[in-house]
Image (cartoon, rainbow, N blue to C red):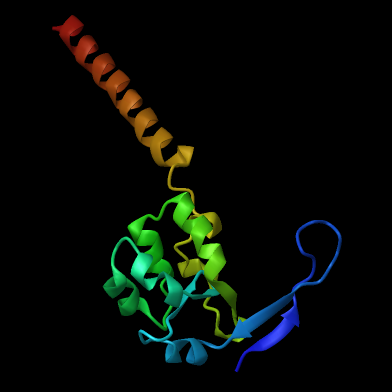
Length: 147
C-alpha cells in the first residue's frame, strides 16, 4: 500500500511541503504487465505504461524490467540527459525507505563516491616509471664508464 508523507521544501526556498508517495517493492512488483508497468530507478518509482510504444529500444526491454529495480540496466545503457529529463513526467513516488538498499552498490554516477580518475590512480605509476628510467640510466651509464 502506498503511503504519503511530506518531503520538506519544494526546492524553491519557500518551505512549502510537498507530499511524497512511498511504494513498497512488493506493490511495484505487481505492476509488471502490458496494462500497467512500473519501474524503480534509483529509489524512485515510475509508471511508464504510456511510454511503452514510444521507447526507442522497444517495449520488450521495458517488459523485462517491469515491476523491478531497473537502475543498473538504465545506467548500463547510458541514457542521454534528454531521456533522464523525460523520465520526470512518469514519476509517481519513491520506494519506501525500509525497502531501499544501501547506496554502496548504486550505479548512479551522481551518488558514486569512488573516484576512478583520481590522481592517485595514474600519478604513482608515472612517478615509478620515471624513477626506474633514472635508475636504469644511472647504473647503465656508470657501468659503461667504468669499463
